[in-house]
Image 1 (tube, helix red, strand yellow):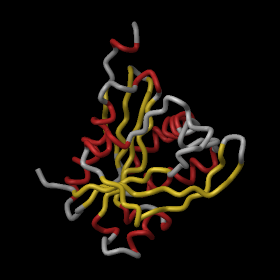
Image 2 (image 1 turned 30 degrees about the vertical axis):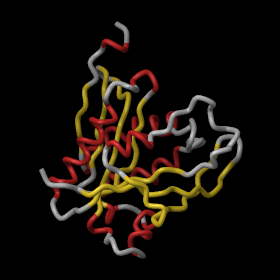
Image 3 (image 1 turned 135 degrees about the horizontal axis):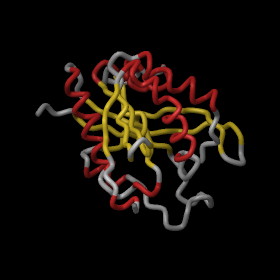
Image 4 (image 1 turned 180 degrees about the vertical axis):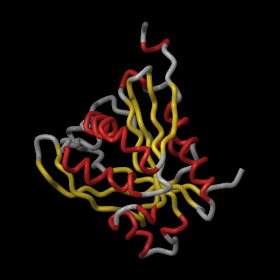
Length: 203
């Protein structure tokens, strides 16, 4: 059966229930983030350390996209207060309290399954989860910054900025994170990621 005609299902997990899919999450992150703009050289130790915050948070969420038994995509989130200090600090130095923010970690989807509405389903599920927790005023995520003339940028690359704006998110250049990771063919280096935010309306 062609992948274009198969039904892709989504389901959500939270807290320690995520443990059963840590390997899937790590695999997807390593495969998808190897491409532009992250150029991430996957590392199992880094993945284990990064993903443990989702296991430790009672209010985390992972949205899995599955085709049969195969996990083809995933999207994560948790209260910003449960994230590492690097992600909390920009808010601790601003007028927005980390206690008011639900943080979206990543959305990773294998190429054959893109363009089929799963991005919206990922955002819908995480925003609904954030509303269900109560006391939160914002949803937010980070996007890595790259120079517009970086020669590694694929010639026909289309960013996600228009999609994010249509979802109601706006960039916050005043809120940024600096994170190190290993780049493909480069090694470890610091990267700047800018926050995008949206008010969390009640429905």
